[in-house]
Length: 256
Image (tube, rainbow, N blue to C red):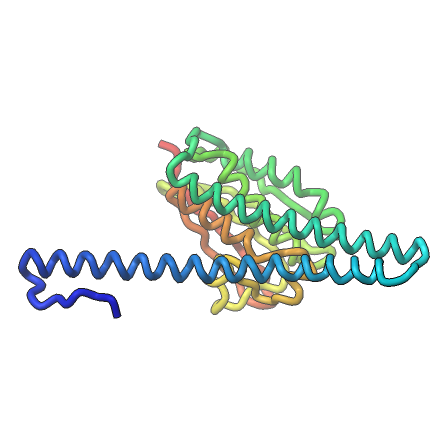
């Protein structure tokens, strides 16, 4: 254990040693997180690459008819798309991290943003026969980097649509209370166990890994959303339980 002994915590040397030990602990934790993140990212990259290699070898091993070749190429393109999505998600995380120092803050109407995002993602809900509603609201102003905050809303809404069953309902609700602006994304999907509420924001965490991969997800969208909200001085809360759907609540300081 590379720590300095703190024999006299009250004197100057003792305080210096304690400060050094605290710094070392935080560095150790950061390195551990980086190692886990790198391992998870490598694992996610390995799977689509293995599939591309496997189907490519099948295509070269012997002659096939046109339909089989089309299927092989289609599979390779699907996995290439997954790789692209993963790389874009990792880049988004990097941009959000950098955003801690480079936010371009401007006053925006949270209700208008919710309506705009819902308009863009409406086609995804329609493909599943879902109803997507934005409840009317008076303008609610927040100070935000619109590109970064919009990505948070997109990721949470996309997640709600993805896991809400065919014919389900997804609602966006904007309100304000006291000094806070609130944007809720409500669905009647399968819900999330309370013990998973905090973990769903961890990078690469998946409540149901098999289903998540089938849906094309990597467990990065909510991690990006949380970072995007937190660098605006806000937070994301989750409510709901299995069989009762989920509520993702974005809470931000009102624009002053």
